[in-house]
Amino acid sequence: MENTQNLLGWGIIGTPKGRQASGDGLDKQLKLANSYDLPQEFCSSLPSPTQKDFTPLYCLQLLQNNGTPVLALSEYRPIFEQGQTRSGSYYGAFIETANYAFDENNVQVLFDSLSELSSYQRTHFIDEENTCYKESISGKTFPGPSKINQIASDLVPLKPNLLSQTAQQSVAYIQVGKEELMDVLKAVLREQFYYRYRQIFFSESEHVSTQISKETPILSSSWLIHSHLFVIPFKNEISYLHQAVNKLSALVKKKTDELQRLQVNQEALIQERVKEKKEIFRSKIKEYEDCLQDYKKNEETYKQNQKVLETKNRVLESVKNIFSLDYIEQYVKDVEQHKQSIKSLLTDVERQVSSISQNLNQTTKHSQNPEMTNNKHPLNKIFIALAVLSFILSMGTLILLLMGKMYFKF
Image (tube, rainbow, N blue to C red; front, side, top):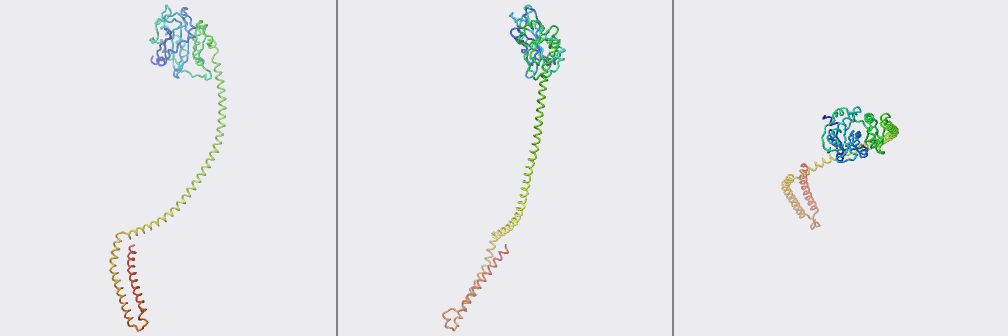
């Protein structure tokens, strides 16, 4: 029973005081019980309850519940509303399933189950004597049909709609002859007639058949059963498929031609791109080769500059050593040491100059030439020149000594 409640829903419907319904099983999830109300145009086709003609009016309909297809079979019988005597009211029952279809071999069980639910409602909520409702049916509990498990176990998957080019119409009515009720429902289920019409009503009641609105399509049960009513729609489908195939073939040819042109253009484009890439590659190679040559030249220049730099560094280091504080101090000491030698040398020069001057004076005194008495003797100039030369040689010698010391330091 637990699995049945996930596959099937069932319930009671009617008009105790306005339209009411109560569902059980799967309908507790779907909540579609109120969707099975009888449309007003069919309410008026029901006989008056006073006629005691309770022949049911059936309806097979396909609904969409949030994208889920729900197939339902319901029945309607005439009754008065509570406290009313006008006709057009009804009581009945429904059985529904989602994503499945009823097995055509179980149509008698379906009719019996609907009758069982309606009988329970008639017994518990309807005044038999006055043929009217005596209380509301909303929120009422009731037992499920005795063969509900058999219906659930024989469900078949709902086949897809193949009539993609045939628009679904809203409603149709099938006029059923005596003993044709089961055959009609079997044919409707087998031919998936619910894809052509959203609501399919049918009944054995002659009164209902004569009261159906002229605006409602009325179909013959014998035509449905024996003439395969779906042949025409499927011919339309086949014609559409032929047209679709022809269009598809033309589209394939067009796309094939476009593909061939694209391949040719693509090959030419690829060759052009390859040529461009080759030129770019050659240009890059030449650029790299030029860079390599420049690098080699720069490397040679760098090596030469490095040698010059090393020489400069050595000279700079030597200059640093020459002009370092330690060397200057040592140089001052050397000058101090040679200072005494310079003084001694100057003293010797002065002594030599003095001696030369004395000699010159003596020479002048002994001269007997009157012309040279008042004039300097020529030898005087010679002796002075020799003294100056001696002084220069002495100073040069001293300077050479100092420079030689600096040179060897370097």
